[in-house]
Image (cartoon, rainbow over all chains, first blue to last red):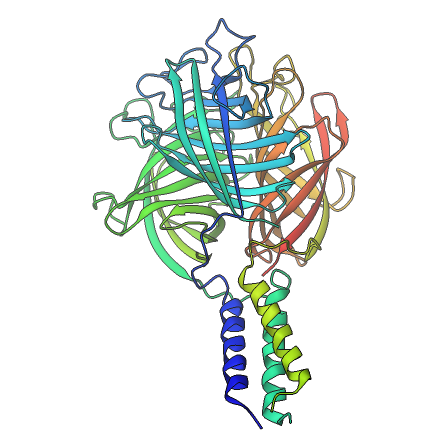
Length: 186
Length: 186
Length: 186
């Protein structure tokens, strides 16, 4: 004999299973499984500051060079960097990791960059890496890029990172605040 | 009393749940959750076309330079670009977004490139970005690259994009058709 | 009438469904769905070995050039490569695919690189590509990078690849062993 309750229960169960089975097709909840906030600090090599510099131009357009940003809009400059990551916006705070990778300016009529980089952690709190890629239209207050993978404590992570320019001092120093929201955690 | 129907229903329900629980291990359906087709248009800077150009060589090998593609096979040239995206194959159609990033030619005995770039949309139809990476053996009729992430309307997207060379005019202009199939939509 | 067994079965079923529905929030099993081991071989162009070389410097810092690694620590050199992939550690074994992309050295006080590249397969065994990105602190015995996507036989793959330096001969030749573990297979 099948009671009403049983039918309802089975139906609910089936519904839930179905929605799982079509995973990838239906909207998923957008609550992050992990939230992190960091700052990183970039000091560009300008010809006479090798010891303080954390980044260097390694590609430039026909009209550029390796010790000054190209005019206009840094267009065509490709920079590799190894920047300290801190928990607050102070360049001199103890770094909790390194931001390593590249950015290049790819637009001739405004400031716009593209980023490919990693966060490397090796501390008591985190051991592992997060990998990022995406466009950085840097005059926007916030810019979203993708967390495309992770290793160690961030094994197989995916998410979205929101970049905000926290300081910008001429061509030499800038500081980004990065709000990392992971939506896939393993 | 347990009826046959109930047992079958429970069993089916259990089966479905199990297949969801092992998600990531079992084949998943390959129907896209979103399909998009775009064209993008690249006009390379060649020394005398700065105003029309949408891309520029910023890295070149020892035997190359910044105003002409390296011989042979453009090998060693790294190009940054900010290309208009259109809905049809007409360079002069109103752009619906920008394709921004880089490509570089990495093979010395044939035409082959590697791409890292984003599509940026900010229109009534779409607001957000899609991020791409992959190899582009450009003499093949079709080439598949990865959609490695997305933001905004394409939040957390993953998929495969198929590139087709729709036009190729000397070293100066090429047009790619991109069929984007997303298989993860949130 | 509802038997105990039925209640337990329904409850189990519900539990399983629920855990699937919150997918992305709960720990997932870390058993790979596919494991692969390859070697790839990089012979850098040094000015006089064009025919043997599989890679070339295309970006360098102000103090560098295109035919020798920058001093110190190759810092600022950006290299594009098209390297043979083999099943064992012999450079002269028949290649089973190509590793194509770029690496650049981004740290001024130690050897550290960042990689963006693809594996391209077109053999009886595999047809398709795997795309990778991540940091390579190359003095570490093992380094984990992300498999950020795949196409063909590796459609929509994600995972972690562990790099090991298997040989290092001056600036000219290095060989990496790559243990690929995919955790998302479609």
